[in-house]
Image (cartoon, rainbow, N blue to C red; front, side, top):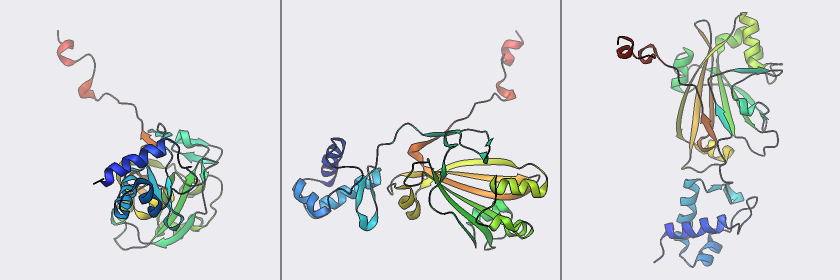
Length: 257
């Protein structure tokens, strides 16, 4: 009896051979079961297995599509903030990226850990700004960014809740209003992609997202928490390793000789 993993391997070989185009859905389960001469349940499990591996991705009623193979990481985040004529940016390789789809702004309740970072009580409302971005020719986003801003600041600076915040975006508005520079601290982690991330980023349930949580401060005041999510197989984190005083050269034993 043919197992679903064997069928998945055969489907993968057909994908690699270019049997099906990447811009159209692969055949449905009934056609796949006939093609590979297996039970419908086996064909379905094989497809779900390939979705979980990131070989395929589901678009609901539109069908299941082949996910293009991941190149070398297209963006390597480092420890610098940059600036050009449009304002600050954090991914040098994504400097020319633009919004994909319409951004949104709403008042809502942030996740508990974001509320703690912002210094607001759990359940307290904040301004939530959602934005999806990708390369200029992208048909779907490769990064999802959500900014959380305390309502105390938005009350003083209402433009932070507007659809258009002007050249330089919210960071320029905050620095102008407070007449001081923003400093940033980022934490990088990963987790399984949720349903919305799977749909927008076109990744399977088995693929993790890289999650960059950025805390923006002016002095001791937290003015924003940004949470950016991206497919983990298309991004990397790059930074220079610095020597601590305990790792100085020459080593202490050699200095005393």
